[in-house]
Length: 359
Image: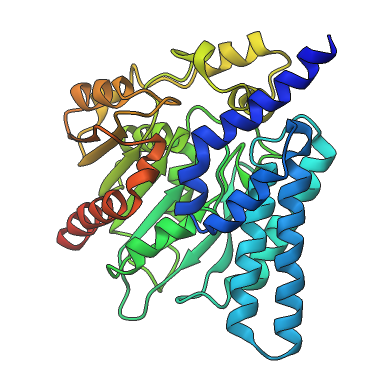
């Protein structure tokens, strides 16, 4: 029995490194930090604590740099600290108190850096279902630009999406990255919402109240489970101009048995399911079976041929059934095509910028 207890955490550490290493690096974590942190982790129970130790080193660097008036160094250190706390907690649902503490530190660290970004990340709150969804809005200089709504996946957040936001901002588009139900700051108040078009509608409503962006030219990007959410929005929110769905499932329960253990546990926690069986039933509610055929606006469906979390047949099925869809499949692509981040993100940003600027 003792040997089984030792094997399971080690298997989870290995699975995390295998599935998400490209993601960590492409979204802003230094390779040296990744390898050094992983070298200290021998059990899954150590995962969050060791990423927290990496984060704490950057917090100390940020504090020292601020004291010395070195604002750029401090801002970069706060962002790296936020990401390290995020990686510690992103699928670490085994110990809720430890996970929540790391989450709070991640949010706090990123908030200290948000104003130093170019353009700055403004924390805004989107009215939704009697509450508010936190989001980061970034608006490039110039007359009212089109805007891209950015949707995280099961375990990503508005902070993690800023690495991708840079590609849209570089093309003159504003971005608004949202923590929706079951995501980031909202995950503790709202469970996962299969009908995510409700969030898209709330975001479009909010953007049309802003004078600094053109809410009549609104695109949407979603990654992983957010790719599913993006397709739902494309089907049911007609005010969107164009949508990008990256690595999204067609129906989330179809490969349930093959998902990483951490992913299944995270979905169970963030959907509010009482058991794994109940979580699987809830996963079946996340389906595009009725939605796909309703998508008439331009939709770019992107996937990776070597994705082992959301297999490429999901994207192929969506692209086949959605009348407005184009398919961009990278045969050697990992989950989210993070192993070819520059090319894939550039192509998605060019595609969406083309549609929004022509609208």
